Image (cartoon, rainbow, N blue to C red; front, side, top):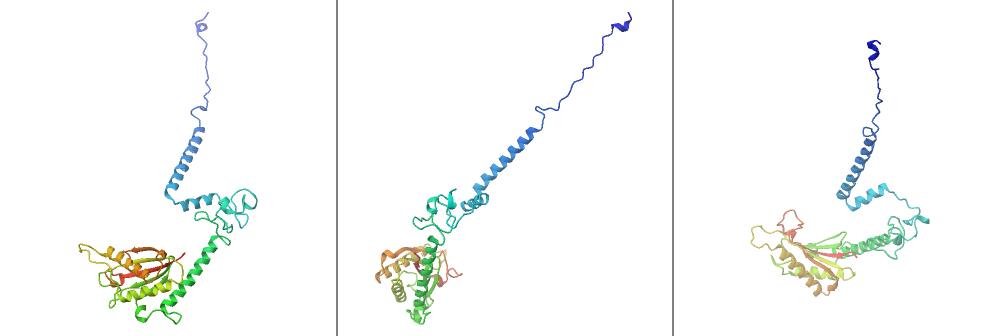
Length: 280
C-alpha cells in the first residue's frame, strides 16, 4: 500500500450566510420612524395648546373638522334637518343663523335673523336715536338749545360703545371747581342741573367719571386721586339734589391724572368730568 493511501480525504463545508433577518434587518427602522413622527406630532400639539388662545384653538379645530349646516337653523347632531332638534339651545350648536329666543344665555345664545343678535341691534339703534336727540337738546343742533353760549363752552358730547358721554371741562377763565378743591362753582351746578333734566327723559343708568390735571412730582402729597374722587362725589350729590334717582347711578369713578385729554399733563383741559348715559 502506498503512502498516499494513508491520507485523510479533504472535506469542504460550505456555509450559507443569511441576510440577517433577525436583529440586522430594516423593519425596525420603519417602526422607529413612525414612533418619532408620533412624538413630534404629540409635542407639536402640546405646544399649540400652550401657545394659543381659546378662540384660536377653536379655529384650528374647525379647520380640521369642518361642519356645514344642512339648513338655516343649525343642529349639531346626526339627525334629520342638521341635528336631533331644530332648537340650537338644546343641541348647543351655536353656528347657525336661526334658532329661537326661549332660553338664550350669554355663553350659549341663539344668533341671527330670529336670535338675540337681532334684538341687540334693534336696541342699539334705538339708543343711538335717543342719544342723537339728547345731543341736539344739549348743543342746539336742531335750532333749540337747553344751554346758553356761556355753558356750551364747557360741553363736549360723544357716543361710544359704552353710551352717550357728556363731558364738562375747565376753562382758563372759568373753572368748574374752586382751584385745587372739590367745591363746585355756580357754572357746574347749572350744567349738572341741565344734564339731570335731560337724562330724566330716559330710564338708562348713569356713570360718573372724574379726571384731574397732573401735579408736580416733588409734592409731598399728590392730590390727584383724592381730588378726582371727591369731585365726582360732589357731582353725584348735585344730581341727587336735583331729583335724579340715586338707584340709576351705577358707578362713580375717579381716574386722577391717568387719562389726560391734552398732551400736556398739567394742562387745565385735563380737569374734566364725564356723565355717561349707559346703554342697556
